[in-house]
Amino acid sequence: MENDFKLAVLIDGDNIPSAYVKEMMEEIAKYGSPTIKRIYGDWTKPVLSKWKSLLLENAITPIQQYSYTTGKNATDSAMIIDAMDILYGGNVDGFCLVSSDSDFTRLATRLREAGKKVYGIGEKKTPDPFIVACDKFIYLEILQNEAKENESNATPDKPERKSQFDKITPKVVRLITSTISDLADDDGWAFLGDVGSLLQKKQPNFDSRNYGFEKLTPLIDSIGKFEIDQRDSYKGKFKLIYVRNKKR
Image 1 (cartoon, one colour):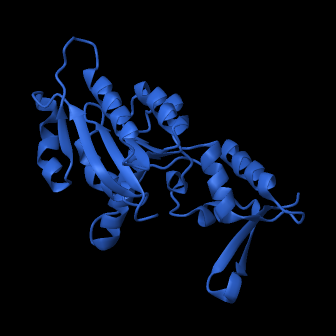
Image 2 (cartoon, one colour):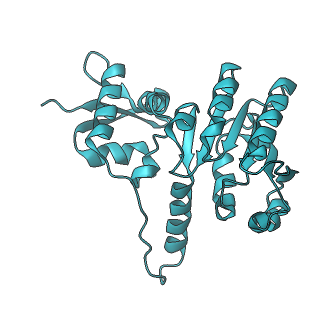
Image 3 (cartoon, one colour):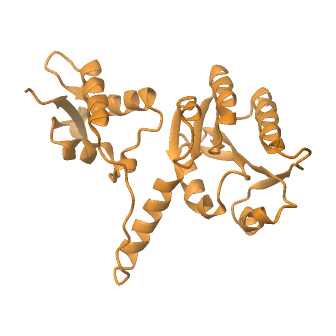
């Protein structure tokens, strides 16, 4: 992460549970400095009351948006208008759109067309069009799983909590296999960093944490269909990891 990479964090308060805010802000900090943090909703509604105590703690600015018409989401419109104002202001390098609503698909696409990095964060129910419109999409459930596991490790006397992760399906294996092939040299080896980057471009919601692994290396190793080679880097300061598909 570059310390000077400025992010605008825009949260759909009507669509995101407040229980995720701590893990969400910690995740966002990995990708840049959130210089703008706003949450949109009708704060006269009791359903948003749980958010109020968390806003000051996380320096998030609430934006009031009344529901003018029943059945219409005025919050979405306000968030989209603000995003475009911020874009034209030229004060940020990227956006983090926090919502599980497909209504922000066109916004994500437009921001990327303007050369901005777009991170999406939402629940697993998020429709695919919004997910693929982002450069990277992170599931809130995975962030919560991480927090629960960290808590369990810190307090071993507590009973172990079971986390729900996605299964490594044949489709996932084919995706990894084809990506390695796309980047392989004459001997079939591909640099793992490049593999991870291309996987992200092909499938923005690809994340090793979705399958219960903190990093890509143990995920690939667990499948058993790939070879892994660690090589000394220039001057031997650290290891470079290469992978290739096992020959049948």
